[in-house]
Amino acid sequence: MSIKEGCVVRSISGRDAGGFFVVLQTEGDFAWIADGKVRKLAKPKKKRLKHLRKTNAVIELSRPMGDRLLRQELARFGQEESRLSPM
Image (tube, rainbow, N blue to C red):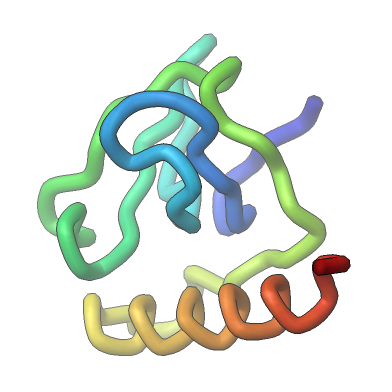
């Protein structure tokens, strides 16, 4: 499991279970994640890597990123994910 900076992940435990986040930084067994809504880029959440599931999507963090743009990117990804998942 190689979760790196910019990866879109899904939380599998805690209050935010099922939500999509982007990884801002990793530190050992932890990742700093944000979604731009509840967890802003200025105050990301520290979460254990074992509580996250990696997706195939990556968001480019090198360009100027704000909370609004991050929300739009994750919303687009969430719509694609729900469209592709079998019902």
